[in-house]
Image (tube, rainbow, N blue to C red; front, top):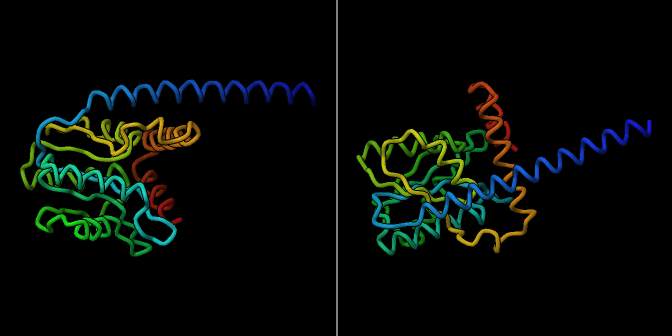
Length: 215
């Protein structure tokens, strides 16, 4: 019995070491990626990806931070329009992008400059719905706005797009704004998101995401 416990303990420690090593490597990739995406020039639109609702079904603080970053860019005339993507929870009759639009209007962004979707519920569908607006308006210079870890995953989702895409985060000093534990949790979420998408058939992946969004 003691021998089995020792073996299990060794396996557990090995898994921890492997996970930490993978997390550090992933983090370095993200940092390098963000350094290669410093804003320069003017963009036809910025796409702001919804994060989550808070406990009162209002916009989470992270969603608001992403939006506030886009407002600064709009005021500086770096982006000409704003696309709001995500947050649709049909079962709860919640539409994150609509709440984002209301928040943007209250911040003084003209309604004629705001576009949003009411169908998307995850990063992949967020991009698909935003892409429809981009191609409809024939915009070519695109700035995607989200959190650091999320942006790196989005860059892989958007990799086949022919438009000129740049990625911008509201949080330039990521490591000094969050604890190592917080960053580690963000990375684990990204790992799970990628594994679920790669391993599950599309039908089951969408069903899993929708079930998670109900909670």
